[in-house]
Image (cartoon, rainbow, N blue to C red; front, side, top):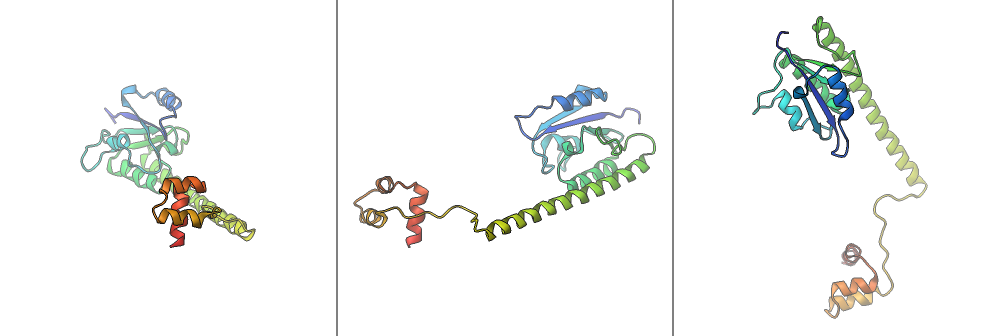
Length: 205
Protein backbone atom coordinates (compact mmCIF):
# COMPACT_ATOMS: atom_id res chain seq x y z
CA UNK A 1 0.00 0.00 0.00
CA UNK A 2 1.28 3.43 -1.01
CA UNK A 3 2.69 5.35 1.92
CA UNK A 4 2.76 2.33 4.24
CA UNK A 5 5.47 2.03 6.85
CA UNK A 6 7.43 -0.95 8.15
CA UNK A 7 7.74 -0.67 11.93
CA UNK A 8 10.42 -2.67 13.71
CA UNK A 9 9.85 -3.79 17.29
CA UNK A 10 12.79 -5.10 19.34
CA UNK A 11 12.53 -6.31 22.93
CA UNK A 12 14.70 -7.83 25.63
CA UNK A 13 13.52 -8.87 29.07
CA UNK A 14 15.93 -6.92 31.27
CA UNK A 15 18.07 -3.79 31.25
CA UNK A 16 21.23 -5.92 31.42
CA UNK A 17 20.53 -7.40 27.97
CA UNK A 18 21.30 -5.57 24.74
CA UNK A 19 19.27 -5.10 21.59
CA UNK A 20 22.13 -4.95 19.08
CA UNK A 21 21.44 -8.24 17.26
CA UNK A 22 17.75 -7.44 16.80
CA UNK A 23 18.51 -3.91 15.63
CA UNK A 24 20.95 -5.24 13.02
CA UNK A 25 18.33 -7.63 11.66
CA UNK A 26 15.63 -4.98 11.51
CA UNK A 27 17.94 -2.55 9.71
CA UNK A 28 19.00 -5.30 7.31
CA UNK A 29 15.31 -5.78 6.49
CA UNK A 30 15.31 -2.14 5.44
CA UNK A 31 13.63 -0.46 8.38
CA UNK A 32 14.68 3.10 9.10
CA UNK A 33 15.92 3.79 12.65
CA UNK A 34 13.12 6.30 13.23
CA UNK A 35 10.62 3.49 12.71
CA UNK A 36 12.32 1.03 15.07
CA UNK A 37 10.86 0.88 18.57
CA UNK A 38 12.76 -0.80 21.40
CA UNK A 39 11.77 -2.00 24.83
CA UNK A 40 13.47 -3.61 27.82
CA UNK A 41 10.62 -5.34 29.57
CA UNK A 42 9.37 -8.86 30.24
CA UNK A 43 7.30 -10.56 27.56
CA UNK A 44 4.97 -12.30 30.01
CA UNK A 45 2.17 -9.93 29.04
CA UNK A 46 1.50 -7.04 26.67
CA UNK A 47 1.30 -4.26 29.24
CA UNK A 48 4.31 -2.58 27.65
CA UNK A 49 4.25 1.14 26.95
CA UNK A 50 6.31 1.08 23.74
CA UNK A 51 4.36 -1.79 22.21
CA UNK A 52 1.07 -0.16 23.18
CA UNK A 53 2.18 3.13 21.62
CA UNK A 54 2.52 1.27 18.32
CA UNK A 55 -0.84 -0.53 18.39
CA UNK A 56 -2.76 2.07 20.41
CA UNK A 57 -4.86 2.00 23.56
CA UNK A 58 -8.26 3.34 24.58
CA UNK A 59 -6.55 6.65 25.38
CA UNK A 60 -3.80 6.81 22.73
CA UNK A 61 -4.14 6.47 18.95
CA UNK A 62 -1.84 3.86 17.37
CA UNK A 63 1.34 4.89 15.59
CA UNK A 64 0.61 2.18 13.03
CA UNK A 65 -1.89 2.91 10.28
CA UNK A 66 -3.80 0.61 7.92
CA UNK A 67 -1.35 -0.93 5.46
CA UNK A 68 1.65 -0.63 7.80
CA UNK A 69 3.65 -3.69 8.87
CA UNK A 70 5.02 -4.73 12.25
CA UNK A 71 8.34 -6.57 11.97
CA UNK A 72 9.88 -8.61 14.80
CA UNK A 73 12.96 -10.81 14.74
CA UNK A 74 11.23 -13.75 16.40
CA UNK A 75 7.82 -14.51 17.84
CA UNK A 76 9.07 -14.48 21.44
CA UNK A 77 10.15 -10.86 20.97
CA UNK A 78 6.47 -10.09 20.50
CA UNK A 79 5.62 -12.02 23.67
CA UNK A 80 5.78 -15.37 25.46
CA UNK A 81 2.08 -16.00 26.04
CA UNK A 82 0.72 -17.60 22.88
CA UNK A 83 -2.92 -17.01 23.79
CA UNK A 84 -2.16 -13.30 24.15
CA UNK A 85 -0.09 -13.33 20.95
CA UNK A 86 -3.08 -14.74 19.08
CA UNK A 87 -5.36 -12.04 20.49
CA UNK A 88 -3.00 -9.21 19.51
CA UNK A 89 -2.20 -10.81 16.16
CA UNK A 90 -5.91 -10.79 15.30
CA UNK A 91 -6.24 -7.19 16.49
CA UNK A 92 -3.26 -5.97 14.43
CA UNK A 93 -4.15 -7.83 11.24
CA UNK A 94 -7.94 -7.50 11.34
CA UNK A 95 -8.77 -4.37 13.35
CA UNK A 96 -5.77 -2.21 12.48
CA UNK A 97 -5.56 -3.83 9.02
CA UNK A 98 -1.78 -4.02 9.29
CA UNK A 99 0.49 -6.94 8.50
CA UNK A 100 3.09 -8.76 10.57
CA UNK A 101 6.46 -10.25 9.64
CA UNK A 102 8.43 -12.62 11.89
CA UNK A 103 11.93 -12.72 10.44
CA UNK A 104 13.05 -16.11 11.76
CA UNK A 105 9.74 -17.79 10.82
CA UNK A 106 8.86 -16.82 7.22
CA UNK A 107 5.57 -18.72 7.38
CA UNK A 108 4.40 -16.02 9.82
CA UNK A 109 4.47 -13.33 7.14
CA UNK A 110 1.17 -11.68 6.29
CA UNK A 111 2.67 -8.89 4.17
CA UNK A 112 2.14 -8.51 0.44
CA UNK A 113 -0.08 -10.22 -2.13
CA UNK A 114 -2.30 -13.10 -1.09
CA UNK A 115 -2.82 -11.52 2.31
CA UNK A 116 -5.97 -13.56 3.02
CA UNK A 117 -4.18 -16.87 2.46
CA UNK A 118 -1.18 -15.71 4.47
CA UNK A 119 -3.39 -14.71 7.39
CA UNK A 120 -5.10 -18.10 7.26
CA UNK A 121 -1.78 -19.97 7.38
CA UNK A 122 -0.42 -17.69 10.13
CA UNK A 123 -3.54 -18.26 12.24
CA UNK A 124 -3.16 -22.02 11.90
CA UNK A 125 0.52 -21.89 12.84
CA UNK A 126 -0.22 -19.69 15.87
CA UNK A 127 -2.92 -22.09 17.05
CA UNK A 128 -0.50 -25.01 16.75
CA UNK A 129 2.22 -23.11 18.60
CA UNK A 130 -0.26 -22.14 21.31
CA UNK A 131 -1.34 -25.77 21.67
CA UNK A 132 2.25 -27.02 21.87
CA UNK A 133 3.20 -24.33 24.40
CA UNK A 134 0.20 -25.18 26.59
CA UNK A 135 0.96 -28.92 26.41
CA UNK A 136 4.56 -28.23 27.40
CA UNK A 137 3.44 -26.01 30.29
CA UNK A 138 1.13 -28.77 31.58
CA UNK A 139 3.86 -31.40 31.09
CA UNK A 140 6.34 -29.32 33.11
CA UNK A 141 3.76 -28.88 35.90
CA UNK A 142 3.07 -32.65 35.91
CA UNK A 143 6.79 -33.46 36.05
CA UNK A 144 7.20 -31.05 38.95
CA UNK A 145 4.28 -32.67 40.79
CA UNK A 146 5.70 -36.16 40.23
CA UNK A 147 9.15 -35.02 41.36
CA UNK A 148 7.75 -33.52 44.57
CA UNK A 149 5.74 -36.65 45.32
CA UNK A 150 8.78 -38.88 44.72
CA UNK A 151 10.95 -36.71 46.97
CA UNK A 152 8.30 -36.66 49.70
CA UNK A 153 8.09 -40.46 49.52
CA UNK A 154 11.83 -40.52 50.28
CA UNK A 155 11.31 -38.28 53.29
CA UNK A 156 12.39 -34.99 51.73
CA UNK A 157 10.61 -32.08 53.36
CA UNK A 158 9.77 -28.90 51.47
CA UNK A 159 9.39 -25.40 52.79
CA UNK A 160 11.33 -23.52 55.45
CA UNK A 161 13.01 -25.94 57.88
CA UNK A 162 11.64 -26.02 61.42
CA UNK A 163 13.49 -24.02 64.06
CA UNK A 164 14.83 -25.89 67.06
CA UNK A 165 14.77 -24.35 70.50
CA UNK A 166 18.30 -23.60 71.71
CA UNK A 167 19.43 -24.60 75.19
CA UNK A 168 18.19 -22.21 77.85
CA UNK A 169 15.37 -20.86 75.70
CA UNK A 170 12.70 -21.09 78.41
CA UNK A 171 14.88 -19.40 81.04
CA UNK A 172 15.99 -16.57 78.76
CA UNK A 173 12.51 -15.89 77.40
CA UNK A 174 11.12 -15.89 80.95
CA UNK A 175 13.55 -13.07 81.81
CA UNK A 176 12.50 -11.26 78.62
CA UNK A 177 8.82 -11.60 79.49
CA UNK A 178 9.51 -10.25 83.00
CA UNK A 179 11.33 -7.26 81.58
CA UNK A 180 14.74 -8.33 82.90
CA UNK A 181 16.10 -8.66 79.36
CA UNK A 182 15.48 -6.76 76.15
CA UNK A 183 14.45 -8.77 73.11
CA UNK A 184 17.77 -7.92 71.45
CA UNK A 185 19.73 -9.21 74.43
CA UNK A 186 17.62 -12.38 74.56
CA UNK A 187 18.19 -13.04 70.84
CA UNK A 188 21.93 -12.49 71.30
CA UNK A 189 22.15 -14.89 74.25
CA UNK A 190 20.20 -17.57 72.36
CA UNK A 191 21.97 -17.01 69.03
CA UNK A 192 18.66 -16.52 67.24
CA UNK A 193 17.62 -14.16 64.46
CA UNK A 194 14.68 -11.85 65.02
CA UNK A 195 12.52 -14.05 62.77
CA UNK A 196 13.49 -17.28 64.59
CA UNK A 197 13.07 -15.73 68.03
CA UNK A 198 9.54 -14.48 67.45
CA UNK A 199 8.52 -17.60 65.55
CA UNK A 200 9.45 -19.75 68.55
CA UNK A 201 7.67 -17.30 70.87
CA UNK A 202 4.54 -17.54 68.71
CA UNK A 203 4.67 -21.34 68.77
CA UNK A 204 4.77 -21.19 72.58
CA UNK A 205 1.51 -19.23 72.76
